[in-house]
Length: 235
Image (cartoon, rainbow, N blue to C red; front, side, top):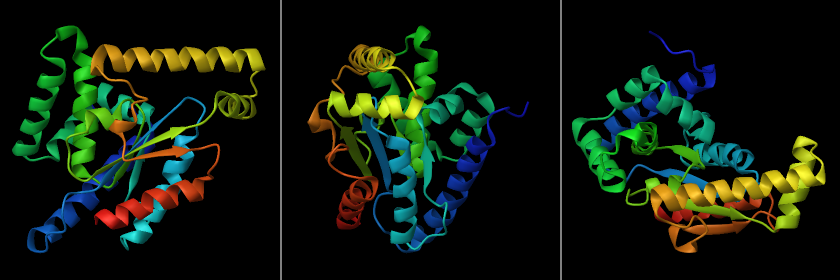
């Protein structure tokens, strides 16, 4: 049965598969190196999706690709794709057997064959498959750790002071200061426990990232520019 996901999921995935197939065909005769992708990790309260949208446009321009060739996947979109069998199967079918085997091997080494982690297994499969297709910006959910061994990735961490993040949350959601502070600390604790329990790492470890950017001291264009500079240097 066809999925009932938001249209953006299908649009993102179909566009990414189409671009990946076309560029992989060209690369067969003109190798250009590993397929690129970006992961964005952030402290709660730093606006990563807005940065990802700006960055995707700049990356399209840098590679002289049609607008929308680089796709943005939020945590919610990745989780929805993993949980929805139709999109999950569509994503996996876009990969060759070697790529699927590499993903299976990584997931088993990371999580083993624990049955009660079925959805987490699918989440890691989905994230690595999306990165394998390339030309995507993956936001949150341990993207840097789940794709850390894959060539072509640029891993970025956004940080800011607690005061700055608190102010942004109040402005964005119209929360009271107490609500914003409570939610921020709950989310920080939740993310910390998720990384430690399942991925056995500390998300704040700077060694996981190629760039750590201070969202309090830089605007979106400046941060996107820094990532783009690294992207160009590596290409």
